Length: 160
Ligand code: SF4
Image (cartoon, rainbow, N blue to C red):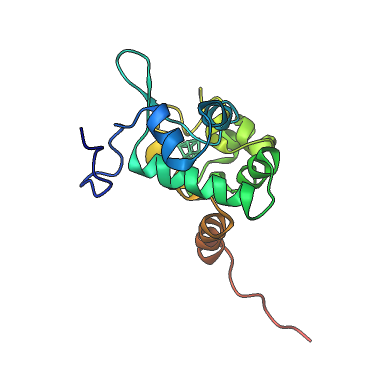
C-alpha cells in the first residue's frame, strides 16, 4: 500500500503512526517519545490510544531535528527558548490572569507545557495556536516576538 501523500489538503490531519514518522525522519521511536515527554510536540491520539502525527507535526519535528543536529541545541535549550515567547502579550492576558499563570512565572518550557486551569488559555487547543505552531525555530519565535513588539512598543523619543 502506498503511504499517504504529503500533499494533503489538510496538513493537520493526524494520520501517521509513530513508527512511520520515525522511519521517515531517520530517528528512533524512543527519540520521538522523548520529544513528546519533553513538551516539544503534542501529537494527537487515535481512539485506540495510539499516537497519530500530522504533516504539520512532521514539519515541526524536522525543525526540532534541525535545531539539534545543525544548531547544536539541546532539548533543554529548546525548552528554554520556547519559554521566552511572551504568550501573555499575544493572548493579551490581564494582570490577574498573568498572576495566575505558571507560563508567565516559569521559564522551563513552552506555555503549552503548563496547566491552563483557570487562566486565559483554559479550554484552548494549543495545537491550533500560533504560539505553539510558530515556536519551533528561532525564526518562528522571532516572528512572534516581532508581532508583539510592533504592536506594543512605540518609537522611543530622542531627547538630547
Ligand atoms: S493556547 Fe496553548 S499555546 Fe496558545 S498561548 Fe495558550 S497555552 Fe500557549
